[in-house]
Length: 158
Image (cartoon, rainbow, N blue to C red; front, top):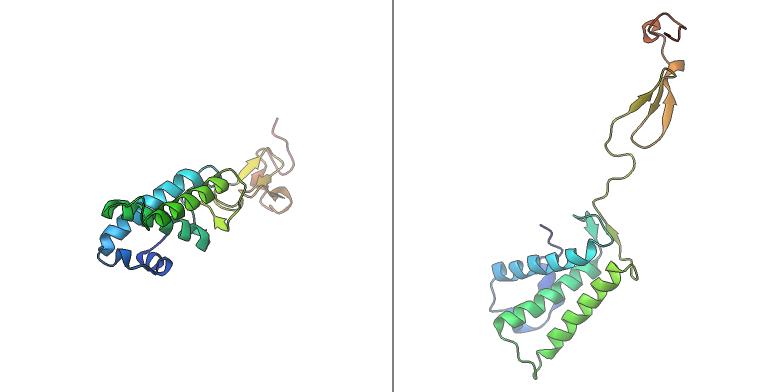
């Protein structure tokens, strides 16, 4: 499961004393849940899990977690708590823009690069080897072993 923000990130995002009475475990639980909300948007553009992300994703997750913690504590809709709901809505709007491709934050997703994994494939008797990155080499010119040719050094074998 992803977690895009830590309790340290959370504490540095908010100068408010609204969370001082809450345990680190409770804040972490809400950060994990907020990260899951973020994943539901991010999966539209990225292969999860992410390898790295920019601070704007961390900020959005902290703001979502902040709102859910305020709701947990008890939300006062006509008081100063409206700021938390507005922050939450801005974070969700940002994630929605990322999901639609309107914003492109600096994110490295879990998609393997072309040169990762996959077997080499040898095609036919020509000895061409196609690597995982799509490049090929001609192994026939580098083989000095005549047993490579099934019926003699230059026989096609048919």
